[in-house]
Amino acid sequence: MIVRFLKSSMYALEGLWFALKTERNVQIWFSIFIITYLTAFWLEVSGTEFLFVIVWTFVIGVAEYLNTAIEKLADRVSLEREEQIKRVKDVAAGATFLASTGAFITGLIIFLPKILAKFGISF
Image 1 (cartoon, rainbow, N blue to C red):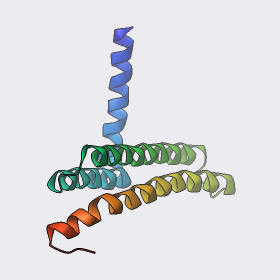
Image 2: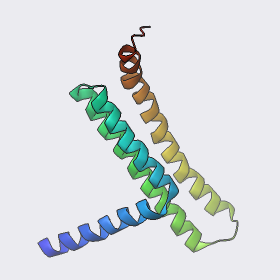
Image 3: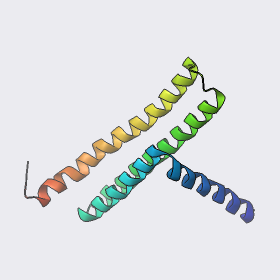
């Protein structure tokens, strides 16, 4: 049972690493992930705020990885322009966009006042 779990974990890590090496949007997400965590430490966000940062960065990552998998599978099903395939890909991309929008709004709420305070600007 443990061996099966370890094998499954290795396959999952291989998939994560493959997408990180080959997919531009996953690379962009990972870069923003790192910048966001460095910014959170620089601004000394609270534990609760950091929890929101963790959750949102992972929600976006999951959405981006699933979007990538769906696009790869859809391209495997058909490379021809088909309305159903287009809709599937658009919905998957929409999920990533929705997660990114939620994270952006949360990031503004958490980071903007702290950044302004660091530079002596109050509103």
